[in-house]
Image (cartoon, rainbow, N blue to C red; front, side, top):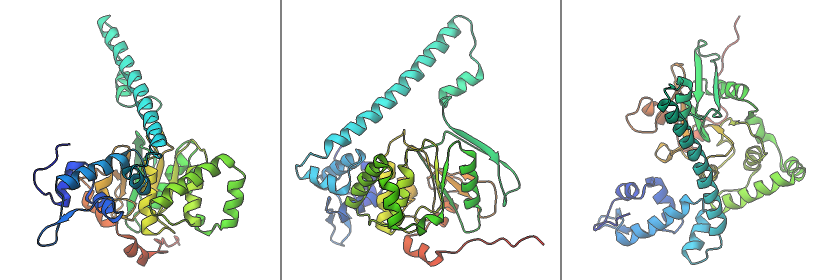
Length: 344
């Protein structure tokens, strides 16, 4: 990255670094970066601040927590080995997939040289591997039975919609249609610590993964709670099918929500697919959505759910942002559900 010869605004600095302005604020809040100030008091990033922020962004991209990043910047590199090992494993998995795709293209070109035209299905698989999960079903009420199809399922898919938009019914239908999928509903908030401890003690491997996740999340600013532990247990239970979570933010404070989504993003491309229903801007910040993530919007007018590109001006983007709010605003409608009167 070429360092600037002038001071940049937070928006310009974030664009240069390839992160969101929210990420820069997080770095500052954790004491990792200290931007300068203009005469009017506005934050400004010069060459020194940008160099430091670039180091932080690189370490965060490796999956280090805020505390781990601070330790590495202070000279303690003990946390780098597991982060680099995980990054290497991801790169090797990507290289394996790429090598397989290259071999397939080579075979198709060889067939063309022999006068053998490839089938359309073979060409389609160049874009989407044959093993990629795909789901299709007729939409339940409040839709009119329209067909819904979703292929190329990403490691994280957000489901968003206003109150009464049908997002819960879509989430439940996805859990029913996806092979070996699980559904984590609002009843998880009623589980107590005693039951959680008993469940974890029965599965030492899952317990180790959950405790490791809790340690990372704690360093990221999360607060341990039964709601968080139940969620981690569901994610780390070893299941191979997708996990659909109803209102992932329920029972979690803002700092915990922000830490949780950061942890979920660091799991890598081969992780268990997650469908996260949310209306919290702490969980879903469109400016931070990257590769391996997708957003499904359930429109308020009960048009069929659509995939939304997280870019201002894209179809559905404005409706998406209107469904999201900070945790303190979301708290005003906690417990409210859409009600449909029974037919006479």
